[in-house]
Structures are given as structure tokens and as C-alpha cells.
Length: 363
Ligand code: CS2
Ligand code: MN
Image 1: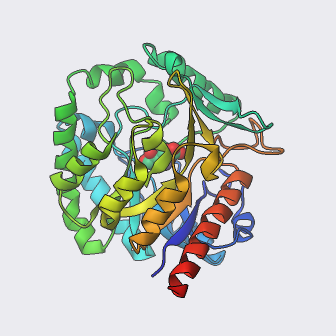
Image 2: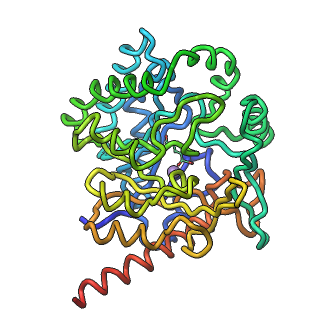
């Protein structure tokens, strides 16, 4: 099986982009999907899953990758309620299996998912992209959360990992996490994974953790998957072929010290899902997301693709965040998830991949 190209789709009525639009992008086999109205901890029911998967299959795609089944904070904190919540998670995995799901992407970040200070920052060519201004993400989580939540309210758009119900209880959440040190979070992570590995073996579904974005502690909250050493630790901690990575190039390379291609070469067998995103760094530590073209950022997109190709990798890949182009602007596009730049990213990746295939054949 060759690598499979995916495209993230937020679902009917929740995404301006249709499955028909995605059909016109060459080479996409997999829709990366989720039940976006589910709160962390809720069981995904077979009839709800069936509804979305049948739309995806009717449009000619497979529904092999789910992004994300979010993990409840109580599991990350290690509260007594975690066993019941883990049982729900296991039931969701069991419910997804009959629909052909092969990979579940998730993250283990406390409270916040990806964090940015500007969702529509000018790139310089007329397009905009997600931007991280370091000095704006320092002491006050409320300010940043208010900015993101203000956006979701204004444009009637909710983002995964930014559920208004959770964000409304930010103080309470911070209080609950106050004794969760980095080591405690690692231990709770291990507890969770060891509990779900048996059902992964039983169903053939791989768990693929997303990197922390950005890859450093924010607002005093510990973050675990931040560099090569922590990825090594994670894979060793639960050394199981079903305990895998969603290797997100842009999340990792927000720290320019991280050599993503080297990590791919080291762990190619444990990467179930690849996110390809390019990052441009500024000397003061700020960063902007960029087009997928190698020279538009410093993430090393071509080296990364070559590392996957050399490794004979057969996982799922998708363009991650793209810029907002042409008529895409606040209100008509999900930040990072427009149609055009992600489609261009796919053509760039497939162009490189096809050429590497051809070169190999000629050898
Ligand atoms: C995604 C993540 O948009 C993004 O940055 O790559 O939000 C990802 O979906 C989650 O962290 C996975 O749980
Ligand atoms: Mn990603």
C-alpha cells in the first residue's frame, strides 16, 4: 500500500468546503473527519458515525482517519473519574472499527489545543496565515482565549479543542491542573495508553498522538511532545506498534532546533499519520505559517518528504494549515483550513512524491 493523501473536512453544515470540491483535488483518497459536536468524554454512537462515513464513502473516499477523538481533561489530570471516561473512549474506538477506521489522531495537551495570537496575519503577498507573537502568549491565558473565542462567536464557528463549554470554565480548569507537573502528566498519559492498547489490538486501530503546538510550556501548563527526546520517551514508554505518532512538521518546527526529517527517519515505522505544514521563523521568536513550498519556510518540507519516501512509508498524510488566499477571509474560511492553499500543498507534495517514485523506478 502506498502512502495515502488525506484532506481534513469538518462535515456537512460545519465546513464551507464540500466533498465535491475535495474530489477535484488530484490524488486525495482519505477524508480526515470527526464528529465535531461531541464533547470530550462522550461516546460516539454508531448511527452518528454511520451518517458521516456514508457521506464520505458516497463521495468516493475512505474514512480511515479520525481527527480527533479528544481526551477529557480528567484523564490528563488523573482524577478518579478517569476510569469511566477511558471506558467511554474504548467504546468509541469499538464503535468506529466496523466503519473501517484505521487511525485515531488525538492530543494530550492540557486545556488548550494549538495556540496563536493572530489567525489572519498578512504574509506579505496579499494572503494571510496563522501567526504566533511570542510576547502576546506569556502571562494571561484569558486574553488569548478571549481573542480565539471572540472569533468563534463573531463568525459562528467552533474550533476543535476550543469548546465554548470548556473555555467558559477556564479558571476552574487551571485550578484543577495546578498540581499536574510534567512527570505527573507523563504518568497519566501512560495510564491512558496502557488502558486502551488492548482495544487497539482487538480492532486494528492505531492511536496517533499529535505533537504539542507550539512545542513548549504555555501559561505554566506542561507540554510533553516537544522534541526528539520526548518523542523517543513517548514511544518507549508504551512500546507497542499501535501506539503511534501524528507527526506534525509545523508544530514541531515552531522550535527551529527540531529537525523533523531526522525524526521521520528514526521513527518511520511508528508514524501513522503525517501533517505537513511549513513555518517561517522571525529572529525574536515569533513565527508565521507559510505555503508548503520548501523555500517559503524553514521546516525542510522536501527533506521530510524524502525521509518518508526513503523509509518506504505507507501511512496517511495531509496538508496541515494553509494560508488564506484570494477570496478567503474571516467569516468565510476556517483559520488554517481554506481550500486553495491546502490544494496547492497537495499538488506540491504529490509532485515531489511522484518524482521520487519515478527516480526509484529508473534505478
Ligand atoms: C491540528 C490540531 O489544526 C491543527 O493544528 O493539527 O489541532 C490537531 O487536530 C489536534 O491537536 C489533534 O488532536
Ligand atoms: Mn498538525
